[in-house]
Image (cartoon, rainbow, N blue to C red; front, side, top):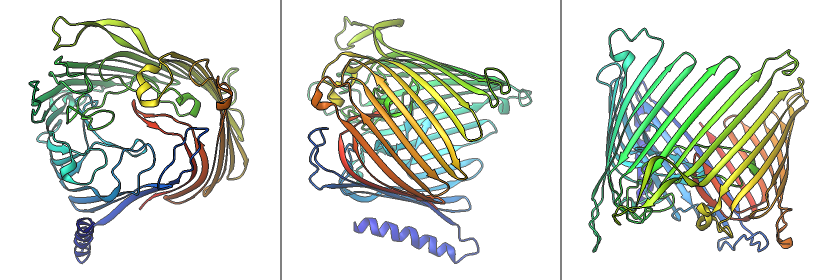
Length: 547
């Protein structure tokens, strides 16, 4: 704590010294603080929490003057909220200094970076997931000519939510990325409407081999090439990556190389949008330590090929990318029926159709036991990991009312998450989910939003129903309440209701919420990355803001 306080004093002392000059610079920041108390509740499976209260919080401050900026983020977990794998304590978890001009950007300390789609490298933070895989080291970005950008970096990765350098990843990460905007680079292409971009990435992780039996590669490279074409109503982009043999805990110490391919195409015209994406992943788990598991020390990100839903009962069975192998595609059509037509009505009607399908690779056991398996590049496996067919119709009926109806049909392989969630079996889930939402403008600045949701399934915990009401008095107040009822549980003693109520106040850039509720156990996913959320019962308070 003495080191933490000293660093904060140095930071503000520097800012104060600058304030004595003509250009004092600016200080900006944001913060969030979440507190939750826990009651043991054997009915819903909420465990005893020894300290009774958990809290997560951070304060992020940045100082900028001219081409220079610096920042620190103070984090506190006293102890962490349930479901967050974080070190108990408080300290400076993020600090940096950066100098940037038109052609040069150099940063030392902590930083986040993404090469291409992220399949080679992506370091980022997702506060709601408790995920932070920032790099601590140095990054240099050069723009030597118009249309050329080159990035180089070296560093060590943050291990979960530890504060000490000694607790960071053993692996050393080195990487370089080059991006070329051909229209700016090549003569005669600058006036073309269609834009062309190509790029390439290379990342290497070094970790000492201390295994007494196996000979493990100490330098593991992951590299790829990409392209993007956009013009008018169409766009097309893709990326192909390759990873050398990387025996790890996640892939059961096999020496098979990994690879991945991602293709995305979109069309956007008047009243019509169409998108399609396809992805193949084979043994592409890539971490800064070969023994890391779950969400720890991921160096890359494998974009999901499924729709990210927001309605609660549509997230009962979310999908996480299978790094050891999957093939999938997603297509979506969005159409707006014109207003002042028979089907479109006075204000027009929006229709969205989405279909995604993910399957296993067609794997066979390799003749070489060190390789583990072989998989035909173009062959689908027999096992369906996930399938989602959903449709939504939304329409404004008057100046005071608009609504939508959504349907989703899901096929979900539970065995992928049995260890994480404690699901009772490996049965595939077939679920039908329907949602009706209405938004009513009651008076000036007063709005009532209502949701009725239903999930029908015969597997796992059975069917659910949910009702949600949210009343808003703009621009400051809102009150919300919802109740989830697991009425279809095969065990009558488990046909429970999970009620939650909240009240919130917003003032400019600041927002506070207070509430009480029962939280069902489940999986929370953001962008194909998931964590388990344990059952909980208690009061909660949250405050967040920026300045």
